[in-house]
Image 1 (cartoon, one colour):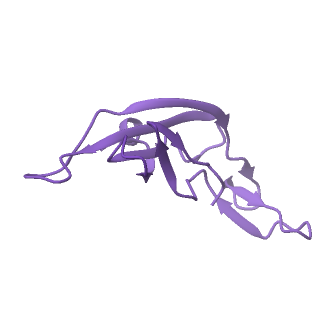
Image 2 (cartoon, rainbow, N blue to C red):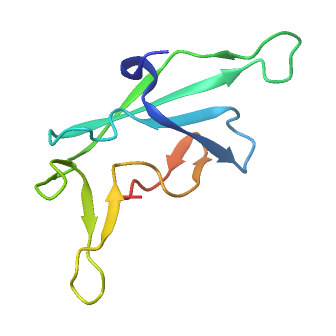
Length: 116
């Protein structure tokens, strides 16, 4: 599987209304550079009940508001730095992963991309 076709860091989506099953959401790029990125990738997991092996459906690319992981001069690499309430920058928040559960409702995704 290539990152360009399936995205990075898979997040299964929970469907509570029974309209959609077996959906996966991924960031098109988690931000290993300081470029702007604006794609999410989704695909279905098919044949989950068998018989035989499960397969992956075709990828769908979703354009979102561009995001960027800023360059951190202290580390010499792109990385989010989250401010502590007292103003220090001691938290390293890594990159643009999904840090919460993803849901599908009536075939639409409900998810938040946050620095983990």
